Length: 108
Image (tube, rainbow, N blue to C red; front, top):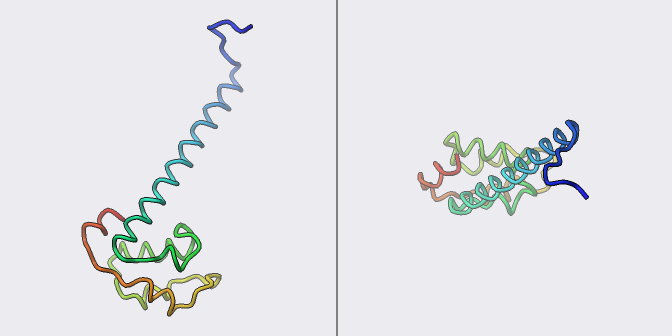
């Protein structure tokens, strides 16, 4: 039986610290991704339909351009990566924004 005052060795403590920190970072990243998706939908930007992962190369390029003030769907669709399966026309069709500044602020 272990006593109530058991302290693991230094390596075990360090591993535990690293593991907990990584778990917290992964959870934070997932929450942030969900919030980004929420505000994109509220802006009427259905990026999640035309790209596999909004936090991938294409998704992040388009989101960055939106945050920088670009609203033209054709210009946003040009930012797609060559590996993206959807065409520029399909992406542009999904990126018709309603232009709400409050949701854009939250997305930033």
